[in-house]
Length: 142
Image (cartoon, rainbow, N blue to C red; front, side, top):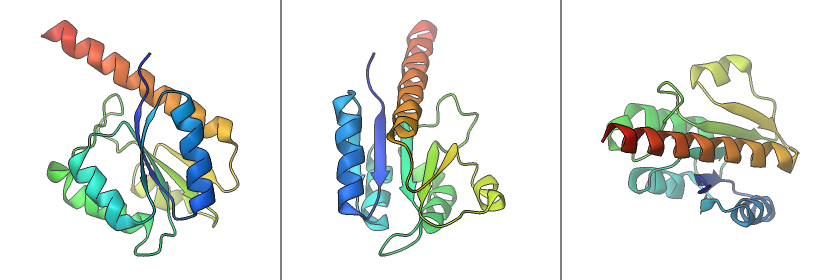
């Protein structure tokens, strides 16, 4: 099975490297962004199956990134296959996040830090399955 295309947005170098190495070891393609500016660049140029998004970033918040994506959905290359139009975002945060805020952005999941790596790997595997299922549907309809 092909891996998922994952955007990892995390400003903590150590955590970002650990998560990235784990995802790469399982066959996923990872685009790492230490800040919001680079994250938005990737979202406008690369299709993604899953976004792992830290909320507290050096240049803007994860919420700012989600607002920018929602206001410019046509200009983004991200994919949302199998999620009924919901952006495939997993929020990562060291601070408590309101369920109302999560619902506002239709996030796929919320993982408070420190989170178990198994949870990230499970969500990535599910994204890879969605990608594979959608690729199969496209070739079936072609």
